Image (cartoon, rainbow, N blue to C red; front, side, top):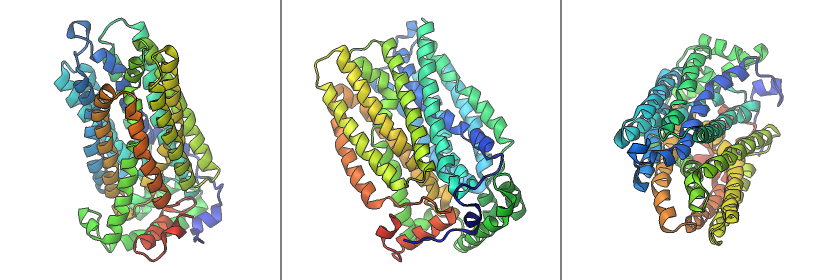
Length: 482
């Protein structure tokens, strides 16, 4: 299918410069992703210490309570994503991220000071509000700031920061676990997240608001100033006119809300986003990210060895994400990347299940770890970058915050289900749990092959135009896959 390229893209070409400050803006905004990653990853190392008796510094958690502590964050993130998307539409992407930084700080301090199980669950829920809000807002903010030729790279920097935050969490957990003999060490693990929260709030003071959001509010002069910070000056007017034309068209149908779901093509598009979001988590990724030390301990490794081994998960995740960014930089399409990754991680899940069938030994423990690393490589190189990118790209401007927040809330609904169910499953059916995930992911692979659109090389305005035509039946699905 032939696609029309915007005037701005025709002038700049695929290697157009994006302005000297875009890199700094990206680094600041993606501190939200770093916090997201740290707060979701840190619990894997904290849980073994939190399970200790109270007189040893722990909270004497049962396996069910461990699941609740892990799930409290993702349950809170469900609401954070849903309402965070709405708030970013109403008050702007920048102000919303600053508010989230405050909630990150409060949640981190609350977790570290929690005196009992009920309070740690509550504090983790508050922290989850910020994690969910960041997951719905930061990718959209980056997608709206970036030129079309660099949008894939810029948005996936957020995924890189997520996995970097998880690597920092795993590394700090291992260091703190080895140097401290105090059972209270889990409090130090959790309080470290307060530092990047402060940096995020201060840094966002220097960042411009999204030009697309400003245009949607009729603040054209401010939008032009925002664009001049992220674009060559000779491209600003053309891109601004394209944004205004789309915003004017969207304004005719009003502000995005649940009422829009009565429109068949909008409902189909939102359901596609929800499916992409939900299925990204039924991969089982967070069963590994949250419970890797517990899984490895169940294979025979001691606690400290499991914590150190988990650092490998973080390293492979970072390497995989860097590869994903490289593939996007080389112009590889969204569809082939995500389909390849889904096939690879499905095979890896089956291998983990098979390794659990082997006799208990140190070799079995490291084979299970190797299976986890293979899984995470495909997940972070192919699925993680692409599903966040698609959620930031596929929705029309007028409902982008609302629809992204709604879809991302299903990331956290699925995440909550996995977090609650996985400890029970691994305790009841052991390695067969991973065979179950493999079967689920075969279905996901079929869905991706049939349904994922290709958005590479299009401006957000062109993506909106093409998907509108696709879901109103004016162009066939097979054309939009190209």
